[in-house]
Image (cartoon, rainbow, N blue to C red; front, side, top):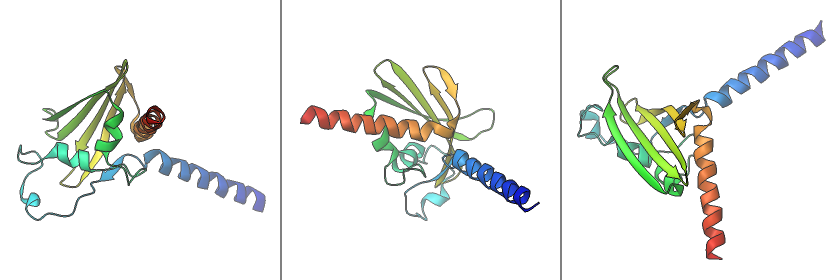
Length: 152
């Protein structure tokens, strides 16, 4: 009976750890100090700098690297900032290319300091957002290795 209980508890623990890993990269907080003046601006207002919020933020998995640094490996980068007509929420898209690959990362602005990675596409195919931060980080580290190799 004790073995069955231990195995059951171990199984539940493993499952709960997997869920934490899967959902860890979905919610984020900006690396910004609280500014009293920005709290007066509605995040849906054009006065709110949603693109700046995303650029200065980082993923929870890589808190020391800002998103604007992570996307430095892209050959081209286009930023889009819009309010969706269906839910009236603010979104920011990063559309980037590396060689022939096209990446789209969509961020949903939750408030002045928080957002979630809402969608991720690669070459017009949608993927889950669970691994998007890892994908960006791997592109970033490959770019650093290539840059260091080229300069040496």
